[in-house]
Image 1 (cartoon, rainbow, N blue to C red):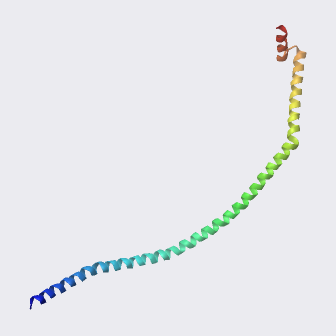
Image 2 (cartoon, rainbow, N blue to C red):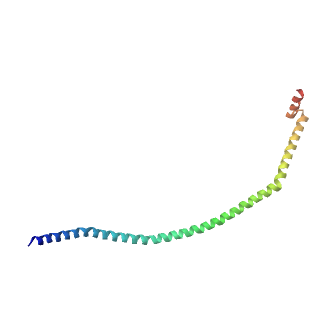
Image 3 (cartoon, rainbow, N blue to C red):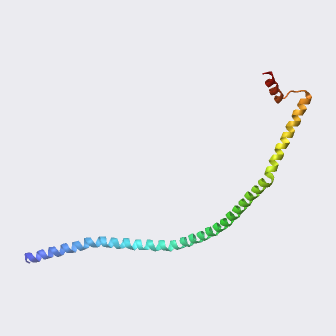
Length: 135
């Protein structure tokens, strides 16, 4: 055996060792990719019912929102009707009602003052007039 043959055998052995060392990570990477593929397949199988349930939920929520829109429109109409009724009441009865209340208050004060004058009591208006007269 010549030194060239020995060198070729050493080189061939080193090449085989290199191939073995590189094959181990490649096999592990293949297993990892297989597990990843299985996990993705399971997630896909479990994801379909989840998406179907989410779609049903969104459909139900949209139905409820349409009902809420109808209720909101009715409440807005009732509110505007109440505002209009309040404005009509204020315009037609508000002014005369305030005038009537003021008139009845004035009449009651006048009757009370007259009763006090008949009883001989001096009211605060009479006191003011006397004080002004003294000065």
